[in-house]
Length: 57
Image 1: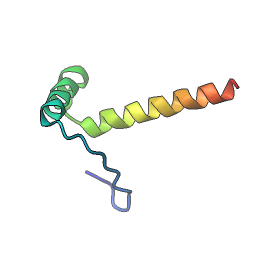
Image 2 (image 1 turned 60 degrees about the vertical axis):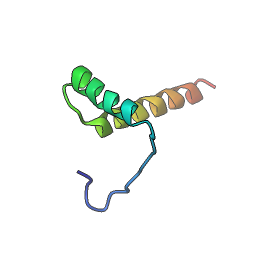
Image 3 (image 1 turned 30 degrees about the vertical axis):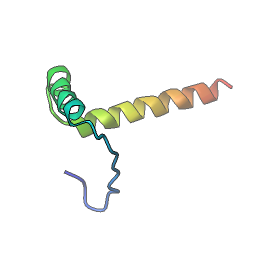
Image 4 (image 1 turned 90 degrees about the vertical axis):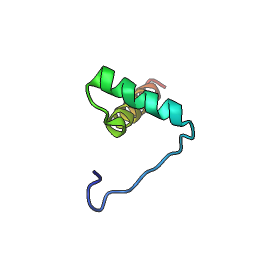
């Protein structure tokens, strides 16, 4: 559930089958169907890698 006052970011994924499989994959891999948490972790990892690469320049 979103925190009051937090921005509501959204993205589109039109493939219902892929979204359902992603939910199942999250349950199997992470033990939870919390796709938003999995997406948040992915975004954090990508940004951390990006920042690391920028520091090396």
